[in-house]
Image (cartoon, rainbow, N blue to C red; front, side, top):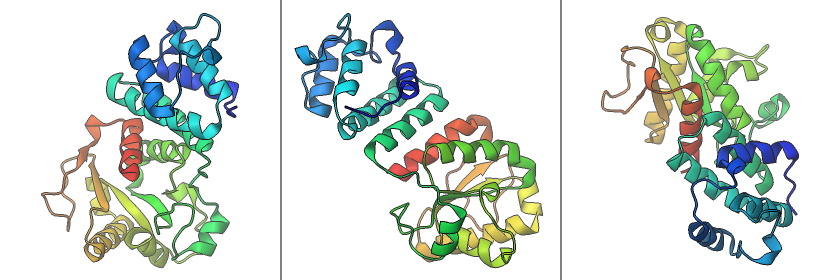
Length: 262
């Protein structure tokens, strides 16, 4: 049987709209096909008969009886469908992803300060990508309220994120430390572009390090998000960006999670 807690189940039921007896917008036939294809089970078998026998109740019986790895697989598929078809609250999606990752046995990718210190400059076994961080956030202090929400949603989703308030930087040479973080230790660097960002010496140091890493690695590691129309020096104007007016912090965190998964 799965290790889903009562709280986990409530969060999943909310995302999948199970209070009405349904699971998303599946019909009996499409739900049967989905469960057969995704889990190799006949959801209408008598073993999944529970209470009214509705789709929601059969799915409750499934996640009660089946092991974590199988439940995690099906949850992952359902979360993808929920994102595509039902315009869910991004908080609910991120919470569900965290549950699915836990069932799958994947460790939370955030490193403790001690582990980060001991593995600095080396491949990280926690991310499994050869980088110490999945993503680093570079921003001006004026935009902290927005960025802190992004950082916390990423952290809750199991993403290894460099965000200054999550780090113990006391006593470190910040010029050296930040150069490594933004040039070589992060798979992606999200730069929050604004006039405030361009005007500050430390953010320019972070920008230069990130762009140098992008050139050295020949990849698309720098992901710009604009608070205003300010251009980011050194980044080609043809690089696609996001506008802060079009994405909430939750939406942006989910976009980052999706990029890391593909």
